[in-house]
Every structure is written in structure tokens, then in C-alpha cells.
Amino acid sequence: MFLLVFQNTVLFRAFEQDVSKKLGFAKDTVYRFLESTSGNWERFLLFLSAKIIEKKISLLTSKARKRVLVVDDSIYERPRSKKVELLNRVFDHADNLFKRGMTILALGWTDGNTFLPIAFRMLASSKKSNRYCEARDDLDRRTNGAKRRKQATMSKPALLLIMLKQAVDAGIQASHVLFDSWYAIPELLQQIHQMGLDVITRLKANHWRCYRFRGRRMTLESLYRLTAGTHHHLYSIRVDLFHEKAAIPACIVFVKTPENKRGWVALLSTDMTLGDSEIIQMYGKRWDIEVFFKACKSDLALETGIQVRNYDAIVAYSTIVFTRYIMLSLHARLNNDMRSWGDLLYLCYAEMIDISFQQSMALLLDLVARKISDSFAISLNLVKHAISELSVAFSFSGFAQVRVCES
Image (cartoon, rainbow, N blue to C red):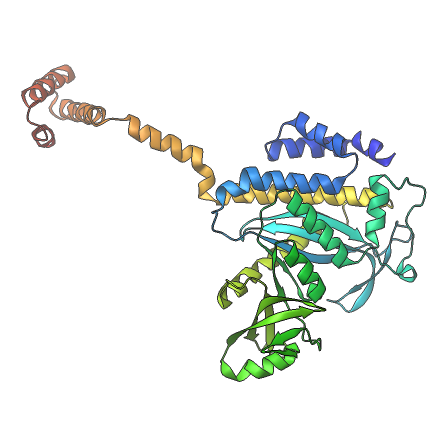
């Protein structure tokens, strides 16, 4: 019922016009697609991003450039709310406080210059004791709203695998998945590796004996102590990431930094073809999703733009905010990347080719004739007649004609 009301509002019409105008799609096409999704906002965002990557961004990106998927989560705060559907207690690691709200698990695509959100989920705590309000129980289980509420209480690794599979099925081209140390779970890394994607992640300095080096299962701290004295600033070591009976080869890069309390940071890559500096450089692309969260909250009013209690309404508005960010990212890419000016450069190039050498000389001689006529008070027609006779006299002398005209 909410979706039918929402589709008839001015907000929906404005959103439809923005998508068709700023992203280059026909208005009727956008409207039919929004109707066909039947409230599946996650599907709309996924296929919109996939279409823009295919039709717009890929044309400006070299095939040799690495395209990656980035995963991270952030807090969706509702500090003064009491009866919002699936409102729960969320721990903020930045402030070390529990806050009211939800968790946004987002998946994005980037080539190092442009970041586009692909999928997201608004998560609630799986523990009933941490939830202030429960989800509606009067919905048909076959509807998108019921499926969305069921996924809201699933674990982050399970939802991450679902979103990655949807991105791969949608045809989004990416070779690596980047995420922070919270998702550096051996089982999750192996499942992503089985999907044909390599992983680059930061590691926790925990005591899991899941790294096998020279036939021995060791912890991350023991690996660092083994290799710390062999290099000054940067050192890598090849290990086998071991979980249960399966093992995949991986490369761990240790970077010494005084900013970390342990004095070092470890990065893991399942792509054995990358060098140490390439692993660090590619992991730096993960910062794009932090900028995305900051822009959506501070500039696009993700948390304060709408005050509703319905869970579907929150998901719909979040999708609209992320679509606005896609518009801004595409606008910035087309204005900053000189290769997007292809039509203008082609027209200038074609114009230069169409002007032949004879036409250029005719324009130059006409300018010379006008200068002589103005300087010496001679009739312009008389000067042009004299130049034409001079050109005929030297018509068989090749470049000598150019030297005579210059003199």
C-alpha cells in the first residue's frame, strides 16, 4: 500500500525526471522499469549501476585497469526515534557508544576514480533483546517487503555473499573485493575465492592459527615476529590460508607504521600475481566507500531527509539518496575526464582536415591583399588581380609559389 501511495507523490515524479534527465535514459523507460520492480529497490539500484558502468564508465576506463568491489558498513542513526520498525541498539566503534538506529551494509564498485553504489541492506540486530521494535508480521512472505525484513536480521557475511552473487550475475566487471579487517574471516575469504573473485583485506592481529607457513600453522603475530627483522619498512610472505580441510594460497604484506598501536599493519591478498606495492595501492581504493558514506550523510541528508517509521520507506528513500550520489559521480567523471569530450574533439579534428592547403593559402592571400590595399591606398580588386596573375605564373613551380607569396 505504501508503494502505491509513494509512486503517486511529487517525490517519485521528481526522482523519475532526475534519473531520465541526468543519466541519459528515456523517461518512459525509467517509469516502466520502476513499475516492473514492484518495490524491489535493491534490484533497481543494482541494474541502474550496472547499466551506467557498462554504457558510461567502462568506455572511459582502460581494460588493463583494475576494477574492484568495496564492502563496508556504517550506522544509520535515529537518535530520537522510538517506534521505527526494526530500530535497534548499534555499537559505534568510532565513539565507543551504543546508538539508536540501523546498520547500512553497502557494496560499491570503483575503478579508482569513480565510485558507484551497487547494493545495500538496512540491518537490524539478530538478537531480539537489542531491538526496540519488531518487524511487521502481516505481510505475505512472497513479497519483497517480507523478504527484505527477513534479510535484515541475517549476519553480515551471509548478506555479503548474496550481494556479491547478485553483482556477478548482473554482469558487473570486477576482479577483486576489498574490505576491512572485520570481514577477514577465513571461511568468508574462501567462499568469495570460490566465486572467482580475489580478496584484498586488512587482517586482525588475533590468535587464529589459520596461516600455514613451511608446513607449520602459525598466527599472524608469530609470522610478523618471524619476518620483522628481515626488512626495514615493508615485507611480504607467502602462506596458505587454512580453514578446515581447504587451503588457498595467499600473500601477506606487513607494513611498519608508528600510527598503529602494534607498530605494524598486515594486508592479505589472494591474488599471487600482485606485487607488494600493487597490493597496498589497490587496497587504497577502499577509501572511496568512506567518502561515499560521508557525502550521503552530510550533503545528501541520508539520515535527516525523511522521518518515517516504515522500514520499506526508509529503504526507498535510501535508494533515492544513493541514486543522487550516482548522478553526482557520473557528472564529476564526465566533466573531469577529458576523454569524455570525444565528440567535441572529433568535430575539431574533422574541421581541421576539411580545410585543405589550397583553402588555407586562399585565406592567407586574401588577408595579404586587404593589408596591401589599406596600407598603400590601392584598390582591393586590383591587388587581388595582381596576386592571381602571380599565382598563375608560378603554378608549375611547386613550393616556390609559397616563397613568392611570403615575400
